[in-house]
Image 1 (cartoon, each protein chain N blue to C red):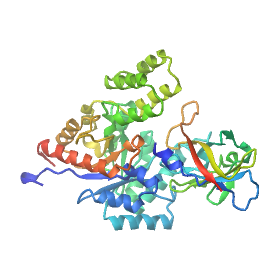
Image 2: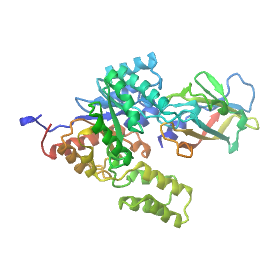
Image 3: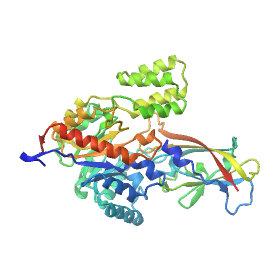
Image 4: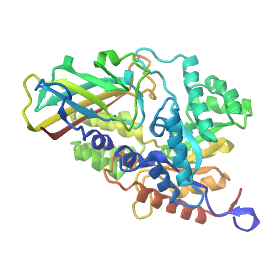
Length: 136
Length: 333
């Protein structure tokens, strides 16, 4: 419950220094009460107005670096602190108009403090949040 | 203290984890969390969770250290326990080997010592790993406690640890008992929250009744599957039986003199009582045992109650504990 509360303020905006009308940024807070290494961010899903963003376009910025999620998977040198957002930048298939938009965010993280199962399955924490924010 | 060396006041403290909602929502700073804890009593002992409250975790930056020390100084709290969670790995498919696991814990112990904590939570999965921490505990002047919660004193792994404690005869090691181990009923707020997420009343009734009657999770799951319920119902059942642990408070006696610290876990105080954990029985048992460690309040109701009521709840719970301690009779410390 608190996680939805915390994740819900995304500061949805057009990406700084980018004239592409389909490109946007938002701030994403961690859905866990302990910092995690960026290597533990398992999945980020985004829909704008019920349409998934282009998955390959998603860049996640933390600790001064912006990488695709796949490239974060071995990076345990940069951590996501609980009080700071990661900035997610992505593109929609079509240009984004000014005005209100429905944003769906999915975030799944692996929890380093939970032991993996004998078969190697690592416990995760998942949240899906749907909000409306204005783009201008 | 009363006459004859008898005490009628418990040693209370607060885990800052209780204020997670306020802290993570940005409503309270770390200093404000500590000030809230300090407002609860004269001798107020504060426990932290490192990965939550040390902003540069897993390292201690000079900025984070200054901020932490400033919060302690400004609030006047006493530091009690450094809450660390043993981590099993940071990269998928590459779990820590034992050497790396110990190394990461020792780094956290260094931080705990530097910040002035006297006690460190080290939930090492095996006695031989905990034993490797002992020289560091001596060097850093830290006591090490292993938490009993999902794993109770009756669990085989913990029994092995108990045997090891007997062998080691070290004053540096002991147990932290989380009173969530003695949850006898599913909290009302949990059921309400789950109802709001779409879990049916029929499923929640089965979960509530099954848990209260002490039935195995698999039996409850079988009944829920028989109703043709969906994944959400199954997940809710699993979550309930993982989050709440039902054992008999009599098992506290088995922890004996190794009991060093207590998480006075609670979910919601209603009319001055915690309806889901048998506090009168537990407090009486702790007094019988002559427990003189810290009763550290841990409120986890923020997982189901989306209101900023943490301080009100913590204060009410500590009032309840003071009252129960006084009426439980006088025991010499």
